[in-house]
Length: 176
Length: 176
Image (cartoon, helix red, strand yellow):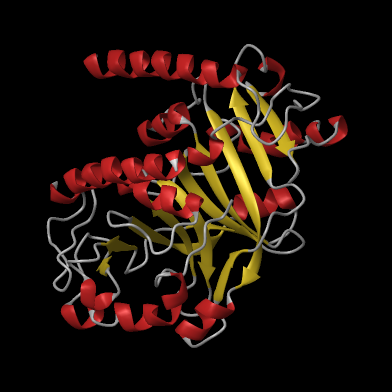
């Protein structure tokens, strides 16, 4: 019971802190996405790591998924659904071979970030009231100049995330 | 000038903080590595992200490179050599296909962390006096149970890092 009280208190404090951040100006661009009204969160690059990923094919990128304090707490406590105030950021970089690493390893095996692809930054923002029609989540995608994708693109976010309903529409697991 | 003073002050404060951490007990294991005397840093999983990487071949893993506050500041300020107190952590996870992601993307292209490989955790610790004979760096490698690698393994760290002398023996660049 004390543990639950502590968690609820922690969520309240972190949600307030997240609220402060939401209102602040964006780092790379001032423009909000046209569907969910989300701007680039200042300081997102300082958030803690949830996991990493690799997409082959046309995307051919390496990814980091970062979370604000509410997100990290929710992941580590196994909270589902994620509480309001959760924000998850996905950064992608072009995957390029590292000649220097390959030389050290003695074989061609090493890939590292090599610049930002067209759609380098995405956010998922939990607000169960504001985004009630899309599973409680707002979605935003920004290009490497900090410009949000157009309306049609943002309307594809939730349909793609719907198969992940069992884990609150979030595909990324926490990598311990 | 004020900027330099600020940076020096920041390094002093962060180094003291790093010193506090160094003395604390390890999270996953109490055992220090047999060559450099480094233990697993408590709280390293909360450090900020420097970059990600992918190794194919026998390793077949996905990696995150995290840094303590001194490391992140040094990277962002482009400081070379890295100041004393810098600690860089490298975590590796087995790279496994994500069936769920592939279903959403409509093709087999997605790889995510799938458990910890044998040598899942490494640290580089900058202490120019203590580690003067190895470029100012101490090295440590731990297995998934938090046990350090043996002496012979640790003696291979610096020779492998020597080709990176021009950037202070650190191979990973900061991914913006």
